[in-house]
Figure 1 (tube, rainbow, N blue to C red):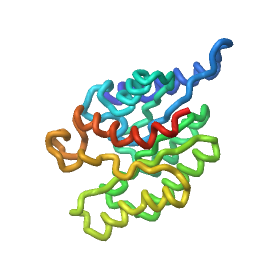
Figure 2: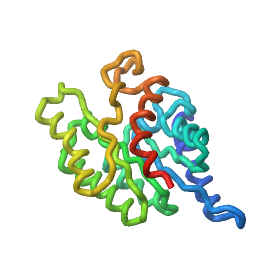
Figure 3: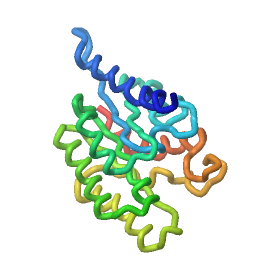
Figure 4: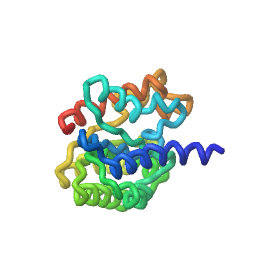
Length: 211
């Protein structure tokens, strides 16, 4: 049942997007689409659907007069390799903008950082090739994984942003990581207040990209 709910939560908005694109209105252009590609931090693990950052982003856009569609393509436990595998399906109807927030699970599992960087680079390449504007979200891992590994992990995001010429959210969990009042009991996933801060971290970089 939980697996079915998670699948429905991901696939329903994507199917709505496809149906909208297949049935364009004669009176209005289809809305711009923002794809939120990520793991549990995007999916909204441990909070209500309405409290995830993609849902909060949808509300912010409406409040500011944008008719944009927001797709939550967050899958808990996903890695950068998983993101690469999912892209072909997600790009059948290319979005306008894609927020890429992947890599945390690569780091927490101690996976090879060069492969992680290559996967992120491939995601960005495919998005750009499809005419999608990527926004890369930087992540960090705790120092208990060893200072060299943690530093190399964090350095991947600004390096890729420079190499690919894409905007970067310096640290997705800025002002959230390490603050117990903004996290769930596991100390990893934000609570509802923490997700509101995630949106504030993303918004200054995303807003100038909006059509």
